[in-house]
Length: 246
Image (tube, rainbow, N blue to C red; front, side, top):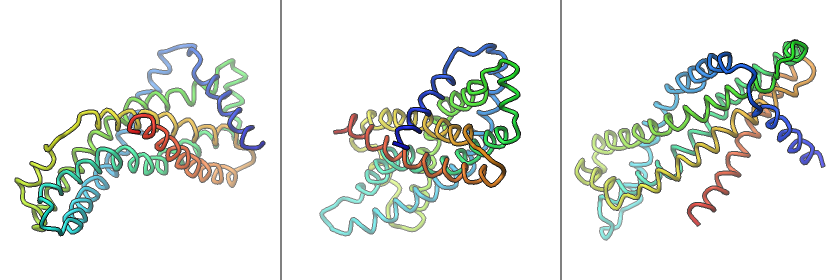
């Protein structure tokens, strides 16, 4: 019953959040601020992780294909499909759930315990929309670009480290990336990241919005935000995969 209570309260909060804003000019400034915080602020960690994960996937694939019957370009195929289908949209989202989710929950949670949200309500402002909607819009807008950058850097890292370590030649890796490429895979990845981009800020904001107590409770809300965001992302990863690829 407690789970149903939180699900119902979450959807009620989203209903308040997605209502028409009172003044778009204020929201516009907030959206650009959140794009900078969520997207630009996460670019560094996404780039580093993508390059080295692409390198690891390439090297592992090369050592996994030891049979002489498997062509060397299969390393490029495996790297491409792993990065596009799962690594970039899902693993990057899990990382951002930890970085962005905890930040959103702690920010809104601190505003709740310091009664700033109550002050917004007294002034007649829809606090849920003002605080949460810009984060959702910014996340849905910027995260697909981060995933595309992650895909590129993952392939780049796989290419560079694969060639440098000698596990695959430059020609075979590039040929494997191009071999029987299906553009639908990229569409599938972007659909997944669009869902995750809504889930991460909304679930994290829910945890922060209903925080009660003091600083200790804000810390606990941040932890719950990360844990629940990751669980819901994995759940919807399965659902979207079942709907689009099954």
